[in-house]
Amino acid sequence: MRISVSADSLDGVAEKVVAELRRRGHEVVTHGALTPGERDDWAWASEAAARDVGEGRADQAVVCCWTGTGAAIAANKVTGVRAALCGDAYTATGARTWNDANVLALSLRLTSEVVLAEILDAWFTAGPSDDETDLANIAHLSEIP
Figure (cartoon, rainbow, N blue to C red):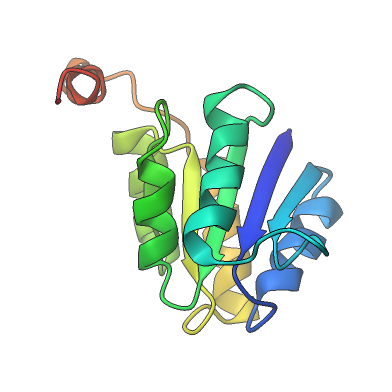
Protein backbone atom coordinates (compact mmCIF):
# COMPACT_ATOMS: atom_id res chain seq x y z
CA MET A 1 0.00 0.00 0.00
CA ARG A 2 1.22 3.53 -0.74
CA ILE A 3 0.94 5.77 2.31
CA SER A 4 1.63 9.49 2.49
CA VAL A 5 3.00 10.70 5.84
CA SER A 6 3.37 14.24 7.11
CA ALA A 7 4.63 15.84 10.29
CA ASP A 8 5.14 19.43 11.32
CA SER A 9 8.22 18.55 13.39
CA LEU A 10 10.52 15.62 14.01
CA ASP A 11 9.41 15.36 17.64
CA GLY A 12 7.94 12.25 19.19
CA VAL A 13 7.16 9.39 16.82
CA ALA A 14 7.32 11.38 13.56
CA GLU A 15 10.23 9.44 12.07
CA LYS A 16 9.14 6.21 13.76
CA VAL A 17 5.84 6.30 11.83
CA VAL A 18 7.76 6.26 8.56
CA ALA A 19 10.13 3.52 9.72
CA GLU A 20 7.31 1.36 11.05
CA LEU A 21 5.23 1.70 7.88
CA ARG A 22 8.23 0.76 5.75
CA ARG A 23 9.00 -2.18 8.07
CA ARG A 24 5.43 -3.37 7.45
CA GLY A 25 6.07 -3.32 3.70
CA HIS A 26 4.31 -0.10 2.73
CA GLU A 27 5.63 2.40 0.22
CA VAL A 28 5.91 5.73 2.02
CA VAL A 29 5.79 9.27 0.62
CA THR A 30 6.78 12.00 3.08
CA HIS A 31 5.85 15.65 3.56
CA GLY A 32 6.57 18.55 5.89
CA ALA A 33 9.41 18.15 8.37
CA LEU A 34 10.00 14.63 7.03
CA THR A 35 11.08 16.06 3.66
CA PRO A 36 13.92 18.62 3.66
CA GLY A 37 12.95 21.82 1.90
CA GLU A 38 9.19 21.34 2.23
CA ARG A 39 7.05 23.69 4.28
CA ASP A 40 6.60 22.01 7.66
CA ASP A 41 3.74 23.99 9.18
CA TRP A 42 0.94 21.60 10.22
CA ALA A 43 -1.71 22.97 7.87
CA TRP A 44 0.49 22.79 4.77
CA ALA A 45 2.14 19.47 5.59
CA SER A 46 -1.17 17.79 6.43
CA GLU A 47 -2.82 19.19 3.31
CA ALA A 48 -0.02 17.77 1.15
CA ALA A 49 -0.43 14.26 2.57
CA ALA A 50 -4.22 14.44 2.38
CA ARG A 51 -4.09 15.65 -1.25
CA ASP A 52 -2.05 12.56 -2.08
CA VAL A 53 -5.04 10.50 -0.90
CA GLY A 54 -7.73 12.75 -2.37
CA GLU A 55 -6.02 12.85 -5.76
CA GLY A 56 -5.18 9.13 -5.87
CA ARG A 57 -1.40 9.30 -5.41
CA ALA A 58 -1.65 7.42 -2.10
CA ASP A 59 -4.07 4.86 -0.70
CA GLN A 60 -4.00 6.31 2.80
CA ALA A 61 -2.14 8.90 4.85
CA VAL A 62 -0.85 9.49 8.34
CA VAL A 63 -0.75 13.14 9.39
CA CYS A 64 1.01 14.25 12.57
CA CYS A 65 1.29 17.41 14.61
CA TRP A 66 1.85 18.16 18.30
CA THR A 67 -1.77 17.38 19.32
CA GLY A 68 -2.96 15.77 16.09
CA THR A 69 -5.98 18.05 16.05
CA GLY A 70 -4.67 20.60 13.54
CA ALA A 71 -3.42 17.84 11.27
CA ALA A 72 -6.87 16.21 11.30
CA ILE A 73 -8.64 19.52 10.66
CA ALA A 74 -6.39 20.38 7.72
CA ALA A 75 -6.65 16.90 6.20
CA ASN A 76 -10.44 16.90 6.46
CA LYS A 77 -10.61 20.03 4.29
CA VAL A 78 -9.47 17.95 1.30
CA THR A 79 -12.25 16.43 -0.78
CA GLY A 80 -12.50 12.67 -0.40
CA VAL A 81 -10.57 12.55 2.85
CA ARG A 82 -11.97 11.21 6.11
CA ALA A 83 -9.29 11.87 8.71
CA ALA A 84 -9.58 10.56 12.25
CA LEU A 85 -7.51 11.58 15.26
CA CYS A 86 -6.69 8.33 17.03
CA GLY A 87 -5.02 8.06 20.41
CA ASP A 88 -5.59 4.35 20.91
CA ALA A 89 -6.25 1.13 19.03
CA TYR A 90 -9.98 1.05 19.81
CA THR A 91 -10.49 4.47 18.23
CA ALA A 92 -8.43 3.43 15.19
CA THR A 93 -10.56 0.31 14.71
CA GLY A 94 -13.76 2.34 14.97
CA ALA A 95 -12.49 5.01 12.58
CA ARG A 96 -11.69 2.43 9.91
CA THR A 97 -14.83 0.34 10.50
CA TRP A 98 -17.62 2.84 11.06
CA ASN A 99 -16.16 5.92 9.36
CA ASP A 100 -14.14 4.33 6.54
CA ALA A 101 -11.37 6.74 7.54
CA ASN A 102 -8.55 6.94 5.01
CA VAL A 103 -6.28 9.32 6.92
CA LEU A 104 -4.93 8.62 10.40
CA ALA A 105 -4.09 11.67 12.50
CA LEU A 106 -1.66 11.25 15.38
CA SER A 107 -0.43 13.39 18.24
CA LEU A 108 3.36 13.66 18.34
CA ARG A 109 3.06 14.62 22.01
CA LEU A 110 0.94 11.73 23.25
CA THR A 111 1.71 8.77 20.97
CA SER A 112 4.38 6.45 22.38
CA GLU A 113 6.14 3.84 20.25
CA VAL A 114 4.12 1.07 21.91
CA VAL A 115 0.81 2.86 21.33
CA LEU A 116 1.86 3.68 17.76
CA ALA A 117 2.31 -0.03 17.00
CA GLU A 118 -1.07 -0.83 18.55
CA ILE A 119 -2.81 1.92 16.58
CA LEU A 120 -1.21 0.82 13.29
CA ASP A 121 -2.11 -2.84 14.00
CA ALA A 122 -5.73 -1.84 14.56
CA TRP A 123 -5.82 0.57 11.59
CA PHE A 124 -4.53 -2.00 9.10
CA THR A 125 -6.51 -4.93 10.52
CA ALA A 126 -9.88 -3.18 10.44
CA GLY A 127 -11.74 -2.42 7.25
CA PRO A 128 -14.85 -0.55 6.27
CA SER A 129 -18.17 -1.90 7.49
CA ASP A 130 -20.72 -3.18 4.97
CA ASP A 131 -23.61 -2.41 7.34
CA GLU A 132 -26.29 -0.35 5.57
CA THR A 133 -26.43 2.25 8.34
CA ASP A 134 -22.66 2.73 8.29
CA LEU A 135 -22.66 3.01 4.49
CA ALA A 136 -25.49 5.54 4.61
CA ASN A 137 -23.54 7.66 7.09
CA ILE A 138 -20.44 7.64 4.87
CA ALA A 139 -22.51 8.50 1.79
CA HIS A 140 -24.17 11.35 3.66
CA LEU A 141 -20.81 13.02 4.30
CA SER A 142 -20.60 14.03 0.64
CA GLU A 143 -24.05 15.63 0.92
CA ILE A 144 -23.08 17.94 3.76
CA PRO A 145 -22.25 21.38 2.36
